Length: 99
Length: 301
Image (cartoon, rainbow over all chains, first blue to last red; front, side, top):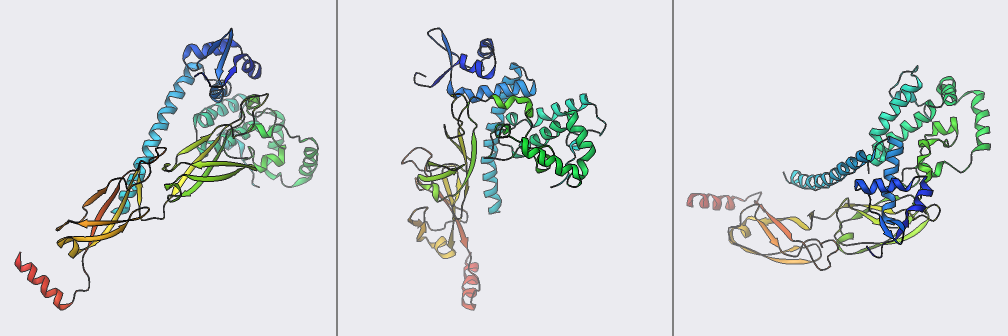
């Protein structure tokens, strides 16, 4: 955690034209972790892409933050099912070849 | 360049009201949005199509033009006149920021759209994409042979003219995606660069079948060695091994050779197992004498 690159929330607010309170809502709902250092609030640079996804889902699809949380959880599930499926398919292909 | 029926794309009748267009577009956008359909090329294409249709039908000016000239756009004077006008005004903006970040540089609009309306409207996706801070992610696919990834595999990739050195670690899985941070498009206003994602597709032209870290291979065994036992030499992935065949080995017997499988991803020195399955080959084209001897064996049982 110590040496991860941080981005000032203020910078992001200017760039995306959003309020600091938006980040607090994200933190409240557990979508993002805010890092507070000397009166400034930061987020990990790695989370920027994630944040942009949240903003797109909100702006382009009118999904509220709770909905976005649900979407992310479901996507995670889909991803793990897909990788399980791909392993199962490889096995099946192998067995089919041998029959 | 074919005519595109934008009404059909959105599932609407020609006389649809602006409100119906908006509703239909929003419904389809929720279904095909790239953020809710990661790594799904079909959805990505669909999303571009509905955006294009919306771009035309939700704008009264564009819609009127499309309704009037859409079908025979390729012909007529209007086409040429507009085309020239477009060349004059078509800037560099808009387009490059429109993509959802999948693929290298696919256009967001069809040829048909571009010739009729020019490159990329400024209102595309309601401007949502133009506020990017982090640079765009890029994705690529790399086709390799199973042999290539038995050891660490250094590779130089050409991504939009930039040479990027990567080493694909031994033991990578088929379909696995590796992320190369910061090698995507540059960020805006000091924002971080995008990342590069490389999906690895493996093909195998070897007699080995890989399942996770284990390798499987079928070894043909003649009837006599299977019955009486003996020795034989067979190929492992990177060498040879001498096998001791036990007497009365049955067909489909499996033998596990520990540590002769595939390297474990990012665990240097660790290997899976090689699993051999014996396939017993029965003799063909028996001579008269062989037949007699088999008869004799049969009668002994």
